[in-house]
Length: 101
Image (tube, rainbow, N blue to C red; front, side, top):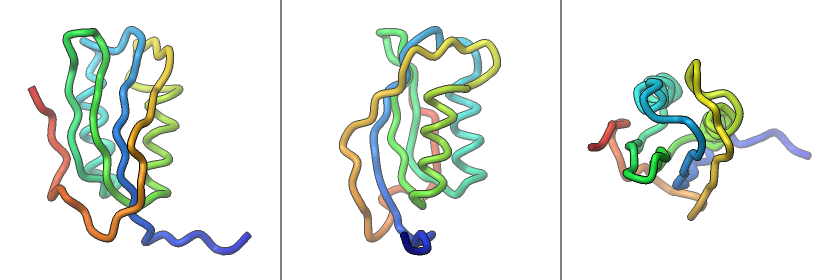
């Protein structure tokens, strides 16, 4: 075990299942990502889930995934958080974190 590289950038897509819409989860996700230096986007789906893409320091993205998987906004009942297309990055593709409609 070595010292983690805090500069390691990763990208991934996520989808959160459960009772997650109408409880400020998209707004809270955006606010937490902006504060953590994570870029990307989040939006509600017609299927009742929340999907998005995050890019940023691995340590910060990992914290967000933990939050999205187990805690979320007050009132959320999260069943699970699925991750897709995770990989390392050399540079960020997004300049900020946005809520999409």
